Image 1 (cartoon, rainbow, N blue to C red):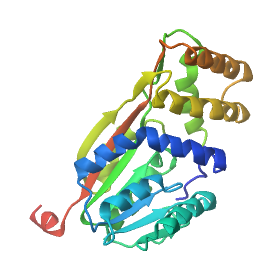
Image 2: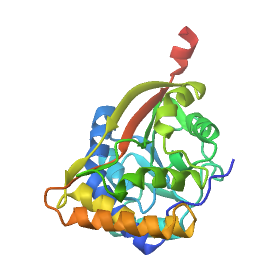
Image 3: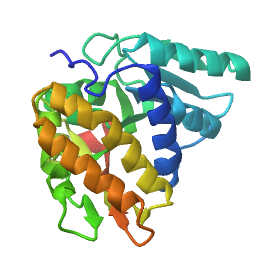
Image 4: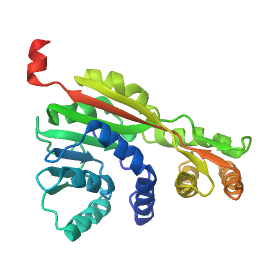
Length: 277
């Protein structure tokens, strides 16, 4: 089992896109953490931590007596996070340069494992989940936020952007990813001996001056060119979709709907629970 290279690239432009993405989607993730009741003192693992934006929020919740481990294969992203942690003087943050398949993950250890926009680009999600489940302490929680790639829409309807959802799905699949992974997680959780305790879809929408509209803008205008390079779409369609998007962005009455991002949370049974079952 070997996770593929990050489909969207690891460079400074992507780092800044991820920073803005975190700002836009932060409240959705914070709401999930509130429901889980992430506690002070927890030992936590952030899988595919990127530049550490979510890991910082987790560290703020678990305080000085907990522990956060950032698992991330990109040197650029991990070094950025290391620099931020150094500025804050935190001593309870660990850094692991690698993937779930490469890293040593202690068994029965973590109280909380978080995975956002990672498992949709993992070619063998069941093996990936099994490894993470083994690393959870009894009663520990695994939370995933990822796509069921429906809902993407731009109003008024009828332009070339209508083809964008299909293009992005092909973009994911071109590297062995699954844009509908969230719909399959309940079954995968069961096979990993995790009890699903939360399943919540999220869709953000806004007008052309909103954060979610800008989030879409930064993704589409950057990655539509890469879709052409990979042969996912032809240049003519890319030009038409981009022109349609730009025309809508100038329209104060246009509205953008994000694709659906689903919170899926599983819990590892405690030893006493397994015995009683």
